[in-house]
Amino acid sequence: MTYRLLMKLFALLCVHPVRKHQPGAIHHTQTRHPIVLVHGLLGFDSLLGIYDYWYGVPTDLRSGGARVHIANVSSSNYSEVRGEQLIRELDSLRAVYRYTKFNLIGHSHGGPTIRYVASVRPDLVASITSVGSPHTGSKVADALATVLPEGSPLRPLVAGFVDALSAVIEFLSGDNDPQYALGALASLSSSGSRAFNTRHPQGMPTTTCGQGPSVVNGVRYYSWGGTSVLTNVFDASDPMLGAGSLFFGFEQNDGLVGKCSSHLGVVLRDDYGWNHLDEVNQVFGLRGLFSSSPVSVIRAHANRLKNAGL
Image 1 (cartoon, rainbow, N blue to C red):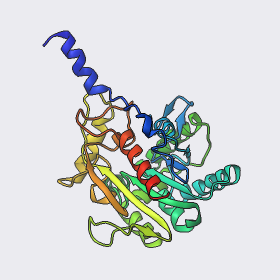
Image 2: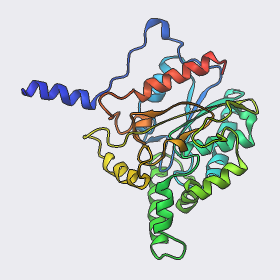
Image 3: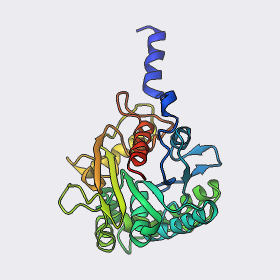
């Protein structure tokens, strides 16, 4: 194989350019209510204003006419704590811009976070969309809870490290929300998720791996997720997610979340060729050669929301 062909193959593996909008698509993503993107565990809005968690997504949505805001809540904490922080942010946005409701899109722990908001403040929410979220818990969180049980001398050390890492992320993203890694672990475990679902059942399937109600309290519910793990040889995060996938046995997963655990409301698709970070176009847009573009999928969903009058 020639050097030129090798370079072409490298480009195909690494670079997935966002499709240019056609002239007729200038208002493709112009939803009635603004879109708010909510990050997951150890997430952020933008680091130093340079690197976005939702890599390439806000710019693409705005180019199609959408009003987009990127939330920044605690990088690690209970779902309810993160949800209350998001409510304060939404109330502020509503006061400043005179918005009435929001289309909330949450990745990973962002899913339970936005569900909490819809449960306690449905007046703020037009739609909920979860992306790769562990609505029935994550087996990785369960494994960590088993390895680090109450009373283990390692538990406070690991928790302290994660809290410190979360604080650094918050600092680099220009915020200072409180961090509590053990709260996040409790929320993302199977037992913690069951308790959360009892308190906030809206949108949850009533059958194993089924779909949930499409509308609850006037709020639309959607979800999707991925089921691939090692997707790009150049992505440094793939080995970590590959290790996480071992806890799922034969269950399809994205490295951190099982296929069925991602189900909420109308399940648009649960088997994209993405791992957990691919779902938000991380890292630097690296993903599988033949996989769908996360940016394009979110853009199409914004158009779905627009067509639904949301």
